[in-house]
Length: 147
Image (cartoon, rainbow, N blue to C red):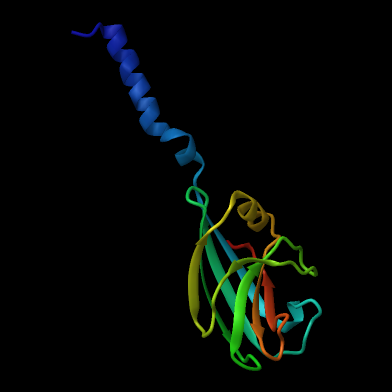
């Protein structure tokens, strides 16, 4: 038989462990991001009539990024699409995560590194859709936290 004081302390320890859920569970969350896509957001800007949007969710516990998007009005078929970074608006950067988008709508997912996740959270990632007429990118949008 357990001493009443020890039993009480054991119960408190168990209750505390269950309610806190451990260190990673207490901090894990899902974050939403979005970017409107337009030729005027390219660097340098272009006169493409195309428009689109990308929405993404990021799970801080698993570092999983999932996205979906649409576009219309491109000058031709999409030849590539990517998340680029790190770059603030008005700056260009290399490919961070390939995001095939041969047709609209499109979806995808990837696991980010800690550094990539920090760039996304800091607003230094953009999404770009490329075409043959605009190999550097036809439509682009900066990924920002969404409500």
